Length: 170
Image (tube, rainbow, N blue to C red; front, side, top):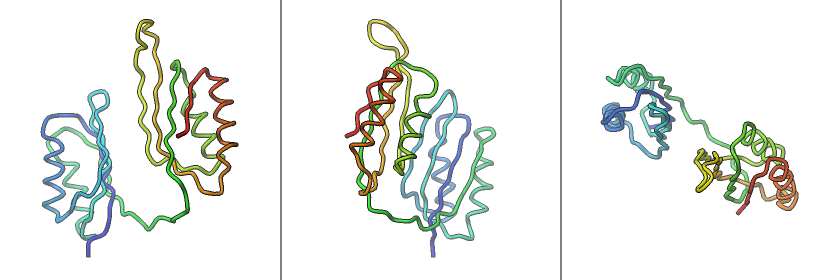
């Protein structure tokens, strides 16, 4: 009976890497269910949710580390049953001049409010006309129904004001 596993990896980017990972998973009787893959500074990193017979997990991890893409860091981790809570999904957008500590401040405010970050994408781009480095983030968060969103808005506004940011909770 297949179990769910998370395959996490980071290695040197090159053409055909995803196809080789997919073939390795298939060869071990795995089924690719969901993924998030990304190129960052010459490296290719990813998280893949797979269904796999548990007896194949260790060999899959070994085979993935031996793909011909140079040294790769790979883990195949079993997924345990997650707790379910009643929550609503929201999007949080952050925009402002780039500086250290933005994610630390925002994530701390969310953590204090018992809000879970389920996805996050960040980047720094040059602003049009001025060329100033601008930090942009988009987060998907799960807000428990018992959280006062008004208090969260007020806390995020404090951070926005202190760090000269726009923070919008949708």
